[in-house]
Image (cartoon, rainbow, N blue to C red; front, side, top):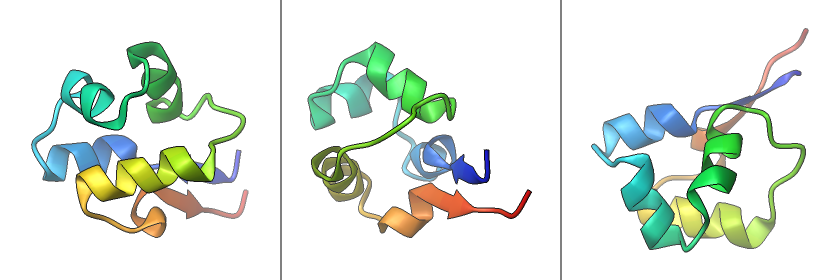
Length: 68
């Protein structure tokens, strides 16, 4: 898939665990894990907004497009 999810990179930069992000974003650990591993088919803008707010980043810091 040409969309790369860099959530783990941003979490590492902020020294935040998946459990901590899950609590702050109010998203289940399993759903956040699916997103982190790039297996998600979609993401709600409200979820993306909450993640960006907690990690103090832009959507482009999390999502990246690469040609196949």
